[in-house]
Image (cartoon, rainbow, N blue to C red; front, side, top):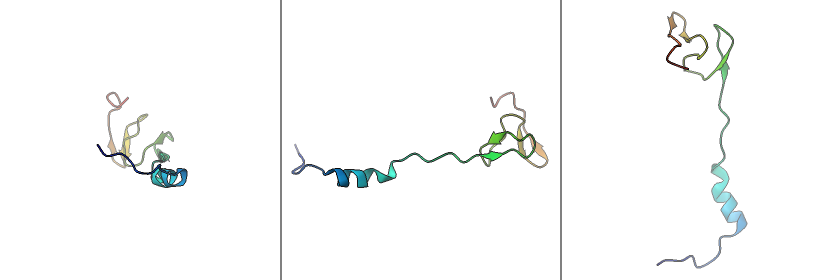
Length: 61
């Protein structure tokens, strides 16, 4: 069974984990009701998607 020959140093370990951080979620405001929502998604409050298109919000929440 393979075993590491040398101990991994703290700096090497931290360099490897530098890409593991969580990213902040990008939020935008709904132009119809002003609630915060994810871009390119339907608004959970009013169902707004784009001008001329609104979804029913009963199944989204």
